[in-house]
Structure formats: C-alpha cells, structure tokens
Image 1 (cartoon, rainbow, N blue to C red):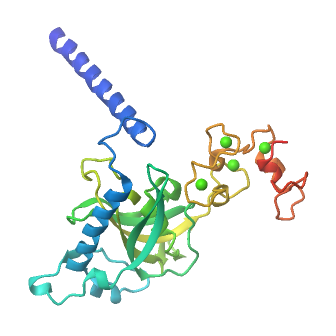
Image 2 (tube, helix red, strand yellow):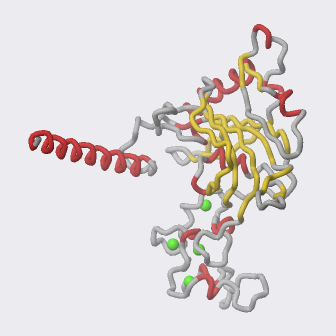
Image 3 (cartoon, rainbow, N blue to C red):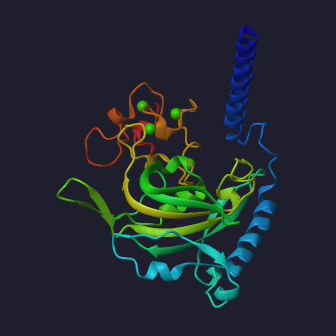
Length: 305
Ligand SMILES: [Ca+2]
Ligand SMILES: [Ca+2]
Ligand SMILES: [Ca+2]
Ligand SMILES: [Ca+2]
C-alpha cells in the first residue's frame, strides 16, 4: 500500500507540475511579445491571405438553413446549420451571396496594419440598444470551425465580458441589438425581439496560433449569437464607462495605460496615478464634461500635474 501511496503522490506531483506548466504556457501565449508560444506564430499578413481564401471558398460552396429563420416568432431563435451545396441541396443560395463584409484592422509583427475581413449575416436586428465592444452581453451562442464541428455551444444565455472574448465575437456582437425582457406573472422571464446573427472570421480575429483540443491552431471560426440583453460596463467603478477608457479608440483596452503602471485605464481607478481617484477628479462640477483645471486640454483624471 505504501508503495502505491508513494507512486500516487509522485503521480499527483507530476500532474500538478504539468498543470502548472500548462498554466504558465497558456499565460505566456496570451502575450504576443513573449517567446513561448503554443506553435510558432506565422506572419499575420500571409496567414490572413491563406485563411481569407479558404473562407471565401467555404462561403461559395456552403449554405445555411436560412428558411428556418424566416418563420421565427418574436421570442424564438433556431440553431444555425451549415451544409455543403450538393445533391438535394444543389439549388440552395450560397452563403457568399448573403453575407455582409466588415473589415477590422489588425497590427502585425512589423507594426503594419493588416485589414481582416469578417463575414456576417444578421437574421434579426433586435429591438433595443447595441452593446459597445466594452460591455457585458447576455448571449446564447454556438461556435464552429469550418469542418462544421461545434467546439462550444450555450443554449441558455450566459454573461460574457466583451473585453475578454475573441475580437471577431466582440466586434460582431456590437452590431446586434438587444431584445426586450418579458417578466411573466409567475416570476419567470423571457426575451423577445432579440438580435440574432452569425459571423465567420479568420483566426487573426480568433485564437490564431493558440490551439485547444477542439480548435486547431489557425482555425477560422463561425459564431452564431443571440443577444438577449446587455449591461454597460465600468470595470473599475471609476465613473468613466469602460468604452471611454479606450483612449485611442482601437477597441483594444489593455493598451491604454496613462500612468504606465501596467494596469490599463479601464481597470485602473486612478488613471493618472496622482493619488486622487478618477471618480473624485473626473467631473467635480457635475456638468457632464471632464474637468480640466489647468486648461491644457488633458482632463484632470488623465493629468498628473
Ligand atoms: Ca486602446
Ligand atoms: Ca494605469
Ligand atoms: Ca480608469
Ligand atoms: Ca487621479
């Protein structure tokens, strides 16, 4: 027994060490400046060109169950099904004829801008406001790769933070509008006229070279998203909505750090690091305009002098 126990202990140690290693590798792989990667990163421009070709080919040779979406009632959605145009389905309309294109600028390893196309269909606009790329969204969704296998699916809605989902998901969800909430007499609630759509994106707007068990590295992704409702976020509770803490407006929140303390502004309650909390110097006269006491064009909460 003792022998087994010792082996078990070593086994647990090995498992723990491997888990630790995995965590370290995963943490490092999120930082593109770090040398450790899951697989070596391909140059972004050439990788994008390859994937965009394969996405266009996919769009030309596949269709989706568009007929199922036409007859939806206001409180319904239906699961996106994509199939090949052939045989009994030879007369279906290709996705290529139905998608709208949006372009997102990605900065590559040489600091050059590589516009990345994503392709989308909006089946129902929704009835309320659009979320921003910083907000929390209450969504049900389904994620697929181009071989049509599903890597993630949420039939019941869940809250997601738009600043921590993949870029293509974040940008596309901001195009949908929220629905209306109906509270029933028995206390249950449901949603009506919520936004429904799906998006197809290259891996540069997804996980790129970060592979997982169900998503190989460099996989273009497909997400169907139902946007039930949303919450406007102020992550650090400093009175400035997170969307307004993206000072350069590039939809990347971790690259705005006024006081260079490695806490980006959207998570930093004292943005200029002057010891005065942003909420106490943002708008003291309450006129809705950020205060600028010395009139130098930099508001007080970003101005440490
Ligand atoms: Ca930014
Ligand atoms: Ca900071
Ligand atoms: Ca802040
Ligand atoms: Ca301050």
